[in-house]
Image 1 (tube, rainbow, N blue to C red):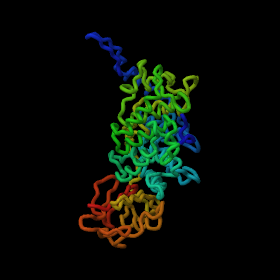
Image 2: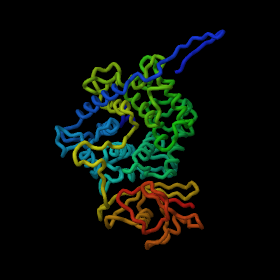
Image 3: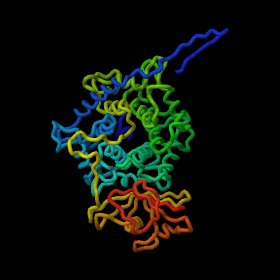
Image 4: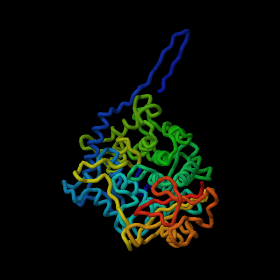
Length: 470
């Protein structure tokens, strides 16, 4: 997510005269074949399986290999099927879920990228990120880092990658049914900030550039350009959008014709190329044709495949390396397999194993968090994580809003609710009253907005959006 937690990583020409012409035609198709990609995936998965610890884990304290879940899912392997020595009681998904549910995880001083990383990988592993356990809601955790003074940023705005990965996590980790769980108003706020940080050359960097002409004029980073492109696309921006087109042009300008590699800030390496290709993949842009097929007939996927040891399956970080790197292998495999920065979990091969695991109900007396947005219909979006202790297996919207008045992070998400008790229709929220057809409506996990009542039943992990309007 930052350099500390996610390392670095045809045209034709023609002339014509007096009816005669000559053509020099570049290759018309990708050089890496589907069969080669299939082999790369098979061998790459085998290598990632070798990284699993004897206790079944991939993630632990500090820098760890949990990003393997995003690569495994992209390559068609379910985390629940990954076991040490065939011991299904230690399957990778169950062990990871147990870790995420631990009260001490991620640390005594967490940052927003901890929760974003976990959301992307939990989703890929088949763990509903908003329903990890009775007490752990990763979507709710992320919401708590909304910057009220700079709406649209998550975490300190100077660390721009926290906002990019908020968009990737919130937009990429859909519901179990495949729906966008967060409202478009929140996605729009993220889109606005990401656009504002696009450099003059069409790319992005890890640090904030918005409002700073000097920063906007600096050279962009290959890695972050891939991530920011993906963040825009999973938030609903079309791949024909001007900002995506400019990002494509920046990446194209960094292509090395002889190898198909991108010349990254830290030199030619697998991690940077993997992030760039994952960005293209997330936007539905083929990294093997058109702008990304060089004059020598090479593509970024060709470069990544060339960095893989076979049959061992690991990828090297630098072309000059003589042994594989775990992170390069994760980034390389995910990109070659066609993945963005997360992927829906494959159907498990293990008999009886479900595609998804999730907390099904509140546990009475166990504190949890719920993700809440309040949109006043005039651009005044509030976003918060509500600390809430249920008294039963379900809750009501009224109870959650009451909790939000005193236990929301950031504060100020809800200042007042009318009526203050009962189960009836919400008539006023934060001092804004219903007026004619303009009323308060509620959506849960991306459902259609409908009339909001205090008695609306909520379940564990629900992502709640309130909106005033017709």
